Image 1 (tube, rainbow, N blue to C red):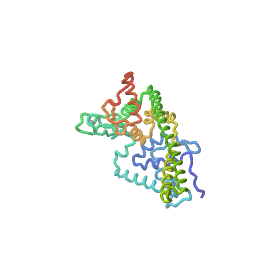
Image 2 (image 1 turned 120 degrees about the vertical axis):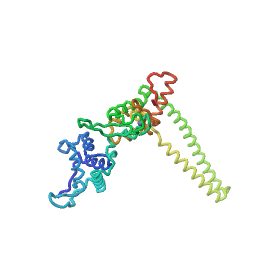
Image 3 (image 1 turned 30 degrees about the horizontal axis):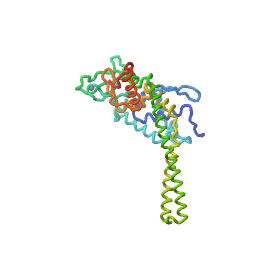
Image 4 (image 1 turned 60 degrees about the horizontal axis):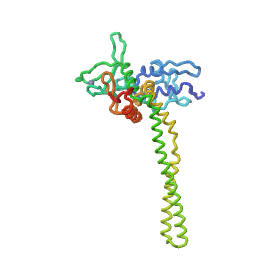
Length: 341
Ligand SMILES: [Zn+2]
């Protein structure tokens, strides 16, 4: 039998199915939803639809670990190269087993659907919000966030997932620095950077002079040694001392010399990421969202049943915002919203 060559137009998606499932947070059906957001085609350009059953079939198809299963008979090793490692396969098998006897926490399974769970505190009682699915009388399922604290006056107030996510995206837009101040922020930042570079270059020249001086002194010492003015032993120590100093200085100069940064484009890149952060979050895969939101609000957010706030903003957002704050205090307070509500 010829060794199997994996279809390059879709094999990565099969690997992803195993990898995502192995996180233990997906059901066949939530993974099927996620995979269907991708347009996956095989080499014949036929599109795949990852139905729930198909996900289950893929996760249990031994061909991917290099085994063949005749219709009636035992598994035998094939001659093809496995696509999935035994370790990943076993992990997925284990998770399927746990899920079927409900030994995995149901909350954990649902987690990718609710990126704001635990990250968001109830603004009234400061308990983390939790989330879940609820079934309406028509049998339709709805996703909600809610405060789980029985003594809170907002206890069990259902916040629809769609609404809360939308409000969160609006809050992201509000958190990011105002567009109209960014060019000025950039200008001042670069100005300060250039000033620092100038000081830095001053230091650099001083170091070059110092290197020169050490080299000259070393030569003088060697000459004195040759004339017998300095005893041999002292000369040896002296020279090795000079060599060490010269080497260290030379290394430090070599390092700094390589650190010429294209600050302008780096800054543009950074500001662009900040500008589009709300889109970044809404486009992120469900399991990636928590990481994106932590980048902005490292300590989470609070929800006040209309509006969010945060105890701490990441420096990339806080610095331009503080800059705007200084600027608006002196110039113009219109068009600026407070950092926290
Ligand atoms: Zn509460």
